[in-house]
Image (cartoon, rainbow, N blue to C red; front, side):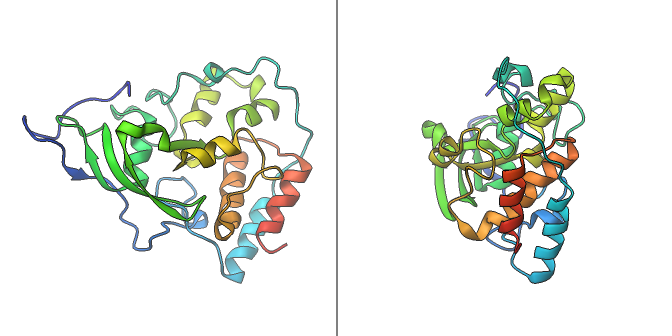
Amino acid sequence: MAGCTGGGLSAGESGSPGGGSSASAKYGTSPLADPDGTKPGLAPISSGKDETTAHELISKLTTKGRGPKTGYERDEFGYAWMDTADGVPLARNGCDTRNDLLKLHGKNVRFRAGSDCVVVSLTLYDPYTGKDIAWKKAKATEVQIDHVVPLSYAWQMGAARWSKEKRQRLANDVLNLLPVSGSTNSAKSDSGPASWLPPNKAIRCSYAVRFAQVALKYDLSVTGPDKSTMLRQCGA
């Protein structure tokens, strides 16, 4: 976990609880109440009023065909979990993006001895599956950080022509990042909503809203089938 700094614990301590969700509900925060992605969790959208608001937001998306993947490499968006992507929340705080996300969304968070950054265990409510995960760093891949709008998807929808700095922002923007089950994230791969939706049906409208929030923030189009699928998740 490069990019972390020590501090926060006295010598000899084995780690202490810290960080974690302060949300009152298990599921966290509705994306409609969290336009920056800086609050923990991803709560379902269920009221008719909120579904209407969600539908209106998704309706703002522009559509176009998905371009070729030619030239795409993960490194085109900067090295993984860099702390130096300026212009996004939590950047340059001495802790890499992955650990920032674990601290933001986890509960019962414990850190490595001598660090207030490196998370070694936590409890995570995974909105994609609707299940709790008791995670330890020894089995790191059991929790992965999902790019809601996958980087290769963004590349095909126009990011290939962006500046390096803008691509780095997308890759490290907490609005576009959620810690989830590793196997679920792997199953999603670089799919858009027409090809993949969270197994937890209760969260699908919220997922569509978050996908739309990211696309609108970065002036990304989505495919026509993706937009249609997103609208259907929110009562349309």
